[in-house]
Image 1 (cartoon, one colour):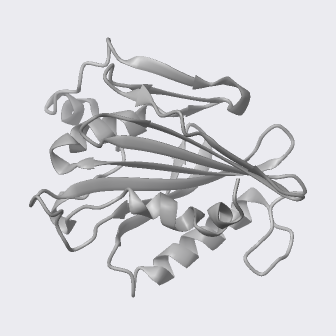
Image 2: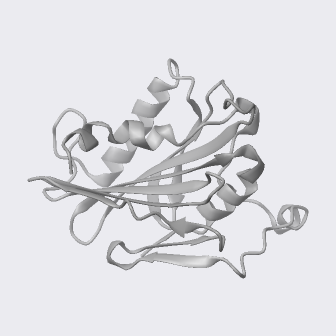
Length: 209
């Protein structure tokens, strides 16, 4: 793995995400009442495939036409290891997972040892600050996914694709200890906005062990 991969990691995550502000994707509302749920029919996930990254303790579901891209990435350094996986479709829908395992524990942006809770807060404040100058970032909030706390945001660039379509995307960064090592998990999903409901449904199936 080339060293440039590490330096380009943030760009790789953001590059697959694009959407209009009018088409923001929102995370599943876990406070929604049963009456509200019934008024909005859910997708039928009965024929969806279950993806299991058993060594990483991560599971999620994908529609049957999605397939695993063979270009998995892994870069091992002295203090950390970066791994990446992707699943996509012929119509350019995709989900990407980046896991950075910190072998000596989490380190803050200023180089000090930090807990997972401190890294979440640091990430949240950093993203909020960047939204003032970055038109790519829309909604930002803290969000737990299957017990793992992280920072959720909507990517909302103010331009369209060359074919006139707009793309939608969500990005979530979480922090956990597994097993005994600090892990930063970046999960990004993107598609043309007509598939927004599918992206929201996929995001809602993510589970951590």
